[in-house]
Image (cartoon, rainbow, N blue to C red; front, side, top):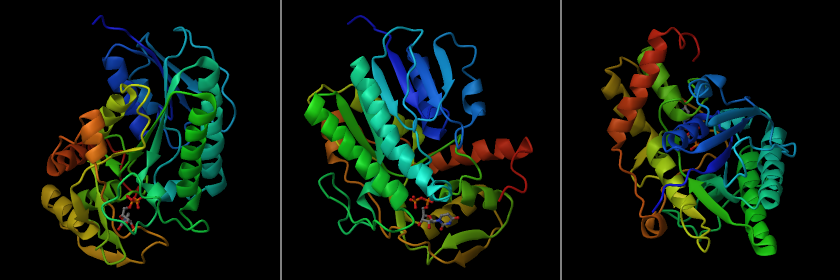
Length: 328
Ligand code: UDP
């Protein structure tokens, strides 16, 4: 089959996930339009593409309707990734977080309807809340506290999924919904507040590692290139498959085990200190990925230790460049 370069718009394209997506799509020969308001995204992440004639950056907040015309021709596909994903970051301005998720989804759906472009929503395991079903299957409807401190993100992402499915039902828009579980890897911000950057930073500086709660809560971390491969595979499915589909690792570990593993990889002298567990912090999280295996022929490939080593190497490099000191 003849190779067809596509024109692809990515909201949140200067963020951790979005910038990896830009990179992979540019490497594959596509045209990429990156939209970001640069609140948690960083221009450093996209500066590397600045000289690429197939790349264009537009600073824009998805809370406001988008009205851009692509220099590259009609847009074929949209990945909606705009929203801070770290609890620390998304709770700083919860009203903005909810608006980003809901107004952002509504604006991008309208945009995609106007252009007749296919649109993929990066949803999240957070739609399951603090799950009472384990591992989480896509048909599980979730357990979310509407009034909790995580609700701005969880309910925002849930409402976004509803908007997506209603645009599909009402307007036959071509949609896809991916539910991502704890993505990690190089280009996470060191001060982003999520557990892997926090622990690596603390361990590299031999500072105490801050465990929230007893450390027995679990997560299943997926290396970013694996997650991106899942998103690309989902976008490539036929119009009859819309998801939602879980994209995540089935390797479930406790947060205390994560701390010990990173201490071991880094050879750190850090001790563990225990701090109060945040409200509504999920106790267990692991995806069932049977659907992704079946429909996308997808499963994670990067072993957890290898992914952590790559991430540690990235932060070590930043530390030696003097970018990390005093940021914890
Ligand atoms: N966590 C921790 N210490 C930290 C940061 C996070 O123990 O310095 C815990 C947090 O309470 C949660 C888990 O690690 O149980 C994962 O947190 P993260 O913010 O990375 O993402 P979440 O999966 O909760 O959205």
